Length: 237
Image (cartoon, rainbow, N blue to C red; front, side, top):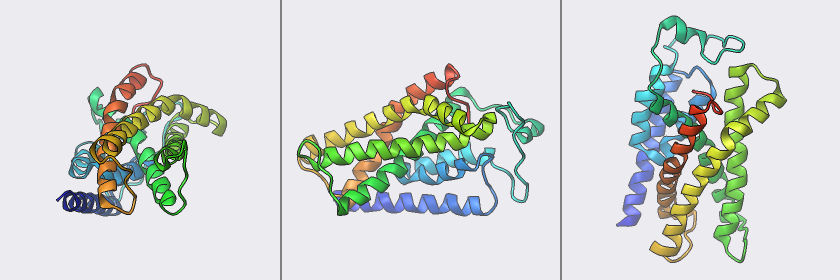
């Protein structure tokens, strides 16, 4: 039964990614190009919830089909076309959601890459393959997450590459760590309490547990992103 539920969850997630991908290709591209990938990656773990979030929060901030993206004003954190269109700012909690999802997309990409690789080349730490995978997960997810933040914050603030990298690390290091804590917490419960053995990445149940783990990561990263954005350490996206 759980195997069937896992397959359905993964298929629904894939379908949601396709729907968003088709909509983006149809011309509804985000003001910041990196956000196109954020919205494509989000439903991989959140399914229909991620699809709803895209149409509620992402699509309204996209360019209408056929309209060329407008440039950022130097030193301005808001795109000129948004000001010209007179769009009201998002409620703060929605900005926090987008910030957390932005962080989660880098984590998602890193976790998929690592878990697929260690299926063929296992890496052990303290005698357990799961701990080796977690260590690599954190490293690769951190790198992807900082890259996602870099390509957001550098053009937004018109920074040099070095300044952009420092700003990206400052803005997202804590958020990424909080996300991974939630993810590891759920996977530890699944591995050592629910199943009492390590799951393999060639099992759909593993990826279903990973979907739940990513949702747990969102919950632990949300309050951290709230604080980061509130204190202006992290930019509103």
